[in-house]
Length: 370
Image 1 (cartoon, rainbow, N blue to C red):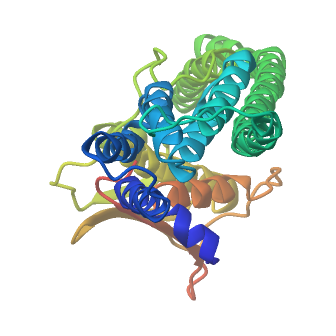
Image 2: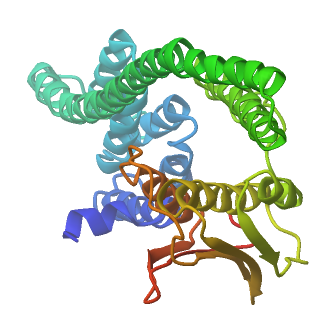
């Protein structure tokens, strides 16, 4: 930190006290009238500097008599500089600078023999030029402060425009995704639900009717979730937007029962858990069961809920597949999404194959994350 920066960090009372001390020394060194009135004028001029931050014009006017009677320089110049920093009216500053020059030139009314001569014109010109220095310096500092504020305002305006542009682009992308989900995915799932309903009615075997019923119920549930997602994507992204009821830990038994797999749900979570954490656990079980249906047909699955200190979580483990897996498309994007959920909630997700040929997914989250 430079010396100038250290000086700027000094408290205002300390700075004012130092300036008043310098002004008092200036008056004392050049003391012209040591009478009671002259000393009182000097004291008033020094004390007025303590008002210069709140009442700069009043402070300057109180220092003018000291320029007349005691030939003071520091006090009027400091007050004039402060006025130039705060005032916008340049005519006022010109008048004050002229007044300061006149006060320094005119004879003191406290002197025994006031004298007027032609040299006062030259002295006035010199004093006027000297009084212009604090005015110009104050105006320079004021301009610098205004430019700094303007630069900050421009930066804030540009940042605001950038955020608005980003929100516009995000809204357009969300609208495009909503259209794609509605026009393509929802259409295909609706056809699956309709076809499953027809098969449920026309099939002769009870097993086929039950499978068709399961497919139809799953399709209907998927359509509900798709409609919710489309509504979210078409909304403005506010957290307070009205959404459909979100899944919780209490919905896990229904999810496991409707999976059509050999699933064993064990363990429990007894502590209070934040809603985002409950949704993350639910989505982890949902994604793991979906992967078992796709990649490990006939496998046995164990879903274990657990508590570990401040953390809660779930472990989904499946055995070796009992049947050949169907050639279904997959890009491991579901696991990527689960990793992202865990990171957003300051948790972790572990997934990978087991030595016996099965697969294991384990998510651990702080109970009050989100």
